[in-house]
Image (cartoon, rainbow, N blue to C red; front, side, top):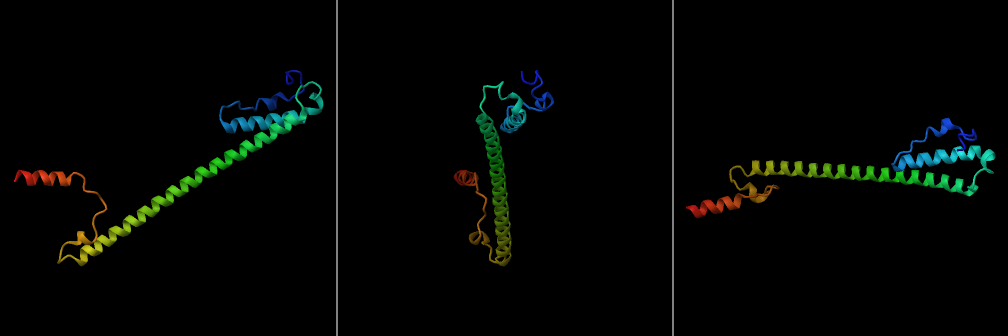
Length: 137
């Protein structure tokens, strides 16, 4: 209504995204508060909105943007922790594999290296198959 009467810049209002995400809402609220603040001397007597509502809108938009930034930082921190955990597991697994190879080499003549460094992989189904073959004999 105010834009139709030339009191607000309609070109700036066309920049409003009107999206449904938090970021779009925060940006739209900030832009709208900025447009109203700029035009306030011409529209203050035509609006039922007190100036403190503009202050609250700007504060709310900035708070929402800060919280969105914190959320993005938290997601990045989780991703970094997951990558670090994966790297640590890979390093531990490769190190254990090298230890197994060394023990196998050292125990080559004596066999039984698996007693010193058992496999990290579970032996699913082997026991059942061994029990069935033993029962069949």
